[in-house]
Structures are given as structure tokens and as C-alpha cells.
Length: 478
Image (tube, rainbow, N blue to C red):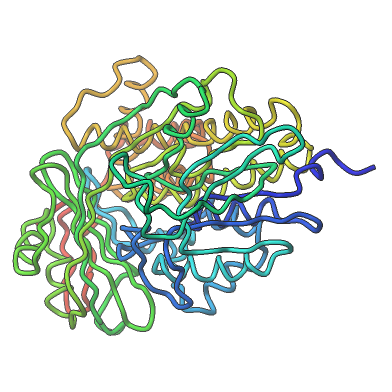
């Protein structure tokens, strides 16, 4: 007997970014058509595009994100490595947190690669899936329910360049191209027009949770020979009132160096001022890396970093055959690297629901939206809590939150004094490969008790970021 999911014969995915491509991979199957529509012209080489304004910023695939993509597209990690992605053990990064430097240790491997490269390879793999077509140069202008004897949905798309603004001249508009769909997936990111479309469908509006710490980052690309660098990468976490930054390899001797800060500490847009900004951080490693390398291109700045979550999971009477994933559902400050991972987890949730026939059943789309919203809960808490601290906003005073915050601060202190088990536990949470409860493992509690009784030990020395550096014994800044 055919499963109920086979009733979904035509799928339209709005958006050909990471969330849309992963959703298409999850829903592709023999006998089904999956059409992915995007307003951008999609390049056939790794190149930034307007619909991904953070495309020139550094990107990494968190461990949980990579394993989720591998579940959808086996061998994708090998494809990335073959194309030049850089595998890095996060324990080998020179990491300066609020309490000091973290100890070098063996932890979780991630892949570092430019966003355009990751997206291109993913699109090529998805286009090779059965029944999938990815079409650029088409802006989705509307969503309509089908009438009797018609498909459940019509997705109206128009050529790029047509304006659907209220004051546009109707006589100049080309006729929309209607795409039939049994299932529509909105993966159009932060610019999603789903609230407007739902209003036109007489669906109740969704509440929106939002937090914008006015975080910004500015990045330069430079060539720096491997033999000059003594670490796998550098992360200087921003803290309240102070900026931070990171330096990550992108392969073949290329690096990106980024300044990160909130509000008045946001890094500048021009190179001379950015050099001064990096030199004024808690540690001047990033400034010295820029000085030692050969710069390529201009400063790339990104400031669309607010956290925004649409509570579609709470909308009564959610329409059947309509789901929403990725940033269109929950957008995080990109600096924490969670967006691709959550999009991949959303896609896996769609695949599971489809395999059970849930997406075709009444109420199935609403259940899928609720599951995707649930998958965002922990990353949302992590991102918004960190941004609240950066912005100087009050954090939750709930007892559980206060106790958890104090315990995490103790683990960070232990890490800065050489406890690699504490650092590894924190890293696994950040990589979304372990639940928050793992931070309270009895072995970690026992190590903390010993540290309190015997002392935390000496601080982790400042690492030699450049090979001609001399490590010093100061556990924090200069």
C-alpha cells in the first residue's frame, strides 16, 4: 500500500538558500515534482548573491548541522572537503572567552568553507535528486488556495524586476506564472512575505518574538601562509562593553578576519578604522594577523543580525499543505552559526513527517510547523541570552536560568584554568550535539568541587597565534 505522503505530488519551495535546498532534498522522491523558486539569478560558480547579504562573511558548519545534512545527502561532507573546505577541531582554536583562554584539546571537528561554495555544492546535489528543479529569477508574489478540482495551492511567481509595492502601476505588471502545489514550503528567509500572504488568506497573524542587540561585523579576506600561523583559528568572544572577532582559514592559504561588536562597539566599515578596531580588542592577535597578511578586496560589513521568531506554531487554524522553515520561521544572530544547522534539522523533521504521511493528512502541516518551532527553542535561548548580555539588557531572573548562568560561568572559569573536560562540555552544547543537561554531569560537578577545594590552578597561557609570537602566562588579555 502506498503511504499517505505519496498524495503530495507537487511541492513548491520558496527560496533557494540553504533552508530551501535542504527542504527540497528532504522531500524529493520518485513520482513527485519539487520546484524551488528564488528571486536571485543563481550563479554556476561560488559567488555571493543579493539574497544572501551575509555571503561574504565567514561560515562554518556546526557538527550537528553537518551530520544532519549528511543524513539528507550522504557524502556531502566529502564533497565539501574535496572542494577545499577546511576541517578544524574546535579544540585547536585559540579561544578567548570572558574568563580567559581555553586549553587546547581534542573536541569536535567542524568544516570551514565560504557560504557561496557550500550553497553551490548543495544546489548541485539537490538538483540531481529525483524530480527536483531549481529556478532563479522568479519572485514569489502571492499564495492562493486552489478551487474545486484544482491543486490545494497556487504559488504566483513573476519575473525579477516587477514591483509588487502598493503604489506600483497595475497596467505594467506581467501576468504571474502560477505554480500548482499540494505542499508549499516557505524558506524565503528574513525577507519572507508570509505574514502578508496569511493576512490575505484570513489567517490570524502570528505573534513575533524579537531581540536586536545591534550586533554588526566587518570582515577582510587575506592571504596568510600556513607556516606563519601557529593555531587553527582565533575566536575572541565579545563581552559587554567590548568588541571581539575571529580569524578562520578558508583553504589554500586564505583567511577571513572579522571584527564583531554590539551597538557602539560595532566594527567600522573602512579598512584603516577596522585595523584600529582590531588593535584595540582585548587581544591584538587579529590586528597582527591582518598586518602579516596580504589583503584582498574591500571590507565586507553585515548588520542584519536581529533575532526574530514568528510564532506560527501558535496560530489557530493553520492551513493544511503549508509549512515554514529556516529563517522565515526563526532567524538568529548569524554570528553564532546556528542558522544552517537549524535549517537542516527542520528538513529532517519534514522528511520524517513525509515518511509517516503526516504532511498530506489534515493538520499535518501544523504539526510539522510546531516541530520545527520546537527545534529552534534551544538555539533561540542561546542566541538571545548571549545578545542580551552584549546589549546590557536584563536576562531572565527565573531560578533555573540564574543557576544555569552561574554554573556555565564556573565551567568557563575551569576551562580558562586548563580543564579541558569543562571546555569540551561547553563546546558540545555550542555545537548542538549534546543536551544542556550534560553540563550537570556528575563528573563535571566532581571536578568543580576539587577545583574549589584545591584551587583552579594556573590560567591557560596566551597561545602563539603567529609562529614568531612568544606565549605568555597571562590568562586573559594583554
